Amino acid sequence: MSKKICLIIGDPIDHSLSPVMHNAGYRALGIDSEYIFLKKRVGANETKKAINEMREKNYRGLTCTMPHKIEVMKYLDEIDNSAKKIGAVNTVINNNGRLKGYNTDWIGVAKSLEKITVLKNKKVALIGAGGASRAAIFGLSQEGAIITIFNRTLEKAEKLAKEFNCQAESIEDIEKIKDYDIIINATSIGMEPNSNLTPVSQKYLLKNQIVFDFIYNPLETRLLREAREVGAKTISGLEMLLYQGAKQFEYYTGRIAPLEAMRNGLMSNLDKLCKI
Ligand code: ATR
Image (cartoon, rainbow, N blue to C red; front, side, top):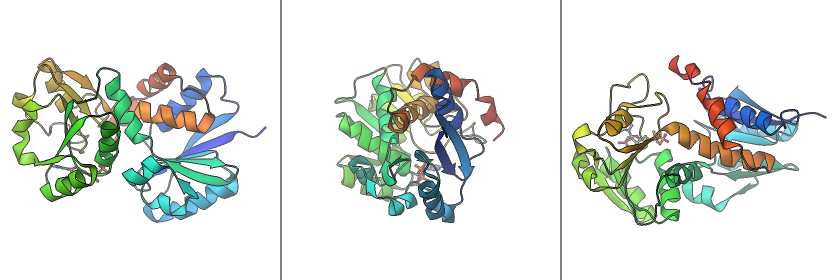
């Protein structure tokens, strides 16, 4: 029997941890003779070609990362409503030649937080107004959180806030973050090689807050370290990667994802990231 192939496409892709995460899951369930998860570097103007290849070679699943999440939507047969509202697809399933797109990023955001808190009526300060923020706003508002978007370009935050019925603030007013239960960094501030940067000064972080950074390289960003130092609860981007991947795993295999095995798969390959 030939293996069912799942593939992550993106550019850059060398350091993607999705293959080790999914393959660890297949091994844990004893289905690694049935499934394999691969990666392929696919440049910005090759999205259509990659989808054609998925159809021709009958791949079971496709994970899309930068820069394909929006472009890929043009070439699919169907798109799930949540992905439509977010405006991005990170997961494609091939059901007998029919390709359907989903978004699991919003589930990754909600699940990471729901493990340690109840989101209903919580005040969330979301820093950033890009694609990652769109998925976060969708996931958080599904669960009844009250969201304010803080962004460098205020107009972008205002536009997004209007679309999703939430509030907008300029990042210049970041001291207001003291009034929030949950702080999320959905920008690239603090990512390697700029791990000395943080979007929020430590003096605005409080003990009773939850601080979630979507960045997973480094695993503990300056923001998370300083939050931990003041006694706040912290969540790293690795949790987001894990939970969005777990939902993909379920779409690809129809089985419940073995979370701990997948987390261990990620943790034992973190050294790959340091080289970025
Ligand atoms: P993604 O799709 O991963 O969310 P993106 O669409 O490029 O990435 O969005 C990046 C977000 O991070 C934006 O909100 C951006 O702010 P602007 O809208 O003002 O561009 C924010 N961002 C990135 N680098 C930043 C920096 N150095 N300071 C402040 N905000 C930054």
